[in-house]
Image 1 (cartoon, rainbow, N blue to C red):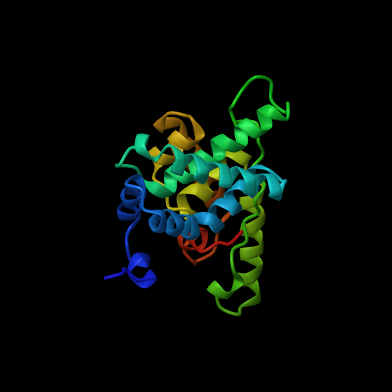
Image 2 (cartoon, rainbow, N blue to C red; image 1 turned 120 degrees about the vertical axis):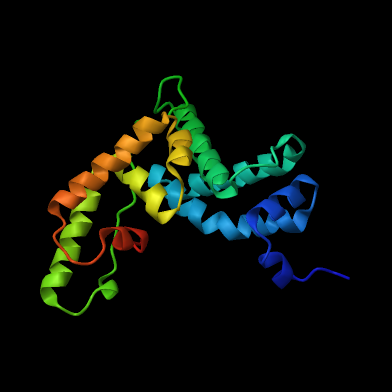
Length: 203
């Protein structure tokens, strides 16, 4: 009996990942469809060239398929894909001579702008003014702190995964998050949960 698209869509990431390792093209396609939009948004946060970002994502998935037999079966798929796109964009910068013989993305500015939705709060004008202030606080954070908060609260990555992505140790990643949140807490006087607002923010 042929598996339907609906049935495939309810498969978790690990099932689809292991299926593609075993050569299943449908699972490969579904993972691409599941994460393409997230990867484009993240890629655009590291490079303003949308066409090159899309090329990088295509290259990541091409490599995954070509070298599927050498992939580890136990990975956090979303974190793996985000990290792979980040590394691919670093190579792009190296090739374009923006960096000197390095594949580090430390110096790439995180370009995405946070936008906490007004609809999450009531119609009170003062409350909306506070949300506008929170947006400004978020977007004024240092790029690495803002990226760490984005990865933690918008992409749902753990501190360990963020550390691996940013090529820093666990404590450094934890410090980035802590400093960013500390800056926000100092200024955020609203009664609405700061963490809920961060998780529901758009870009």
